[in-house]
Length: 138
Image (cartoon, rainbow, N blue to C red; front, side, top):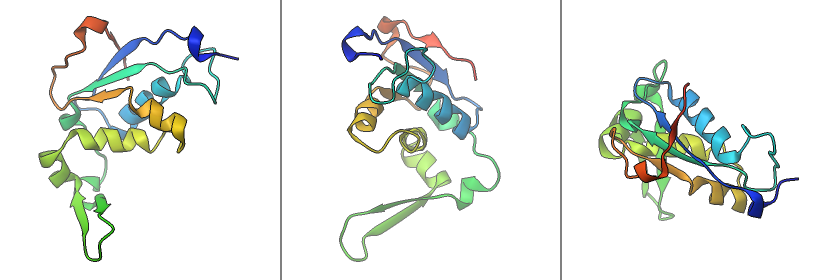
């Protein structure tokens, strides 16, 4: 059984330029959760940090670019807001990857802790070069 004190997290970088959103999110979620490590324990945070660059250039298959809808609700009557992928890519392209990865993590306090180790940037630059992130091949 792994212990949190024994873990030394590493940093990985994923280039999402031209890659399918689901494959990028699945790989990032597995690294965040720690499933790629031999000492994986479901109830311990054994995951690593993940930096996703070029999130604005991620590709969706089929008709999802126009038919997939992201909905927010403010708890007030009539304050439901809906945006499709094309509109979301213009306003906040990082949200596409964040939303997909968050849906693949556990829905508890451990999952909320894991999602904080995900850093998403819409362009090719990121401020985490000092951590020497290793590139991940998809």
